[in-house]
Length: 262
Ligand code: ATP
Image (tube, rainbow, N blue to C red):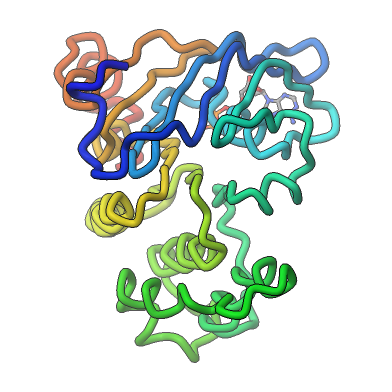
């Protein structure tokens, strides 16, 4: 990655995540092979690719959350330290956070109680100001403040995604991984959410954004990787990928998957 155009964020100086030779398999099925990837503080990096390319596997492997039959090999460094042998809980405690596709909220609890739960680990660790992210999260998502007493299960799809991201931010992560935040959302809502994600740069959090909606993802990201059948086939500054004829043809062209999910 060159220093001249790999970042827009002011904090983008230290490596939050360095991945070398990451492979993953489910039994005999190889889902990822030899992935190298870097992510700096304040940077938004996207991984785009078609269905089944291995995007969710990548995030789950980074989180230590592959299903029982899944197995990963390779090096994962978080803030310079190897983490690939750590449990999910240990990775969360270090500040690594994954917002899964499912969004997994507590639907009978209020919006605010869901947010408070996001700070549970910090509370358990004895942090006195464990709710200090509540105001910043509400500032980022004013809609959540308006609906703070509403049951999470009654929110719209877009609001649920906002709540899932907000809840993750309550834990003050330095690495935030988002698995298809646009899934099932209307284009305007997707744009809203990704606009808010782009504001996260200022907080210094490093965001790894996995998306099938390549157009939206490349608009918001600093740098991108194209994943196909488990391998990186292209990478570069997001603006260069968006102008790459192969990316345009495969992911940005009319009537393709990239658009149909937009
Ligand atoms: P999608 O956008 O559809 O979620 P993806 O890019 O996230 O796709 P993965 O879900 O990571 O792709 O899947 C990568 C490959 O691994 C696919 O071939 C998939 O069938 C396989 N795979 C995923 N999960 C499992 C599993 N639990 N057991 C066996 N194979 C799996």
